[in-house]
Image (cartoon, rainbow, N blue to C red):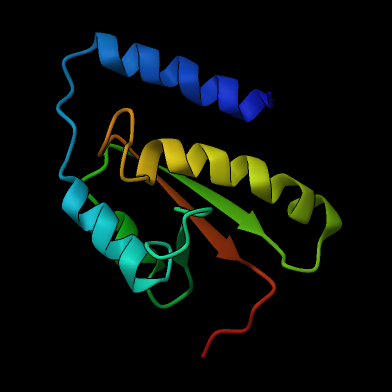
Length: 114
């Protein structure tokens, strides 16, 4: 398994031991539904862009956010995507292990935004 996956699992164990209360999963589901993630069972990472980046990260009830900055044309980024999607399912999916603690997002830095 990837190093990122193990790092996130370790952080979850630390968070579980603390007294943090997880946020509402309703916003996470709404975000996934708005960007198509709710209908695609493979990917629950929230797609962000220049117009909604600040708003989504500021308003999320999640304690932490992991943002993947990638380029759609990059071979290394394409190879990493399935692993990131697995972790996103763990945190953002309908059967999330610890809902509302980590918001998994991604930004395609190669796209031009208006």
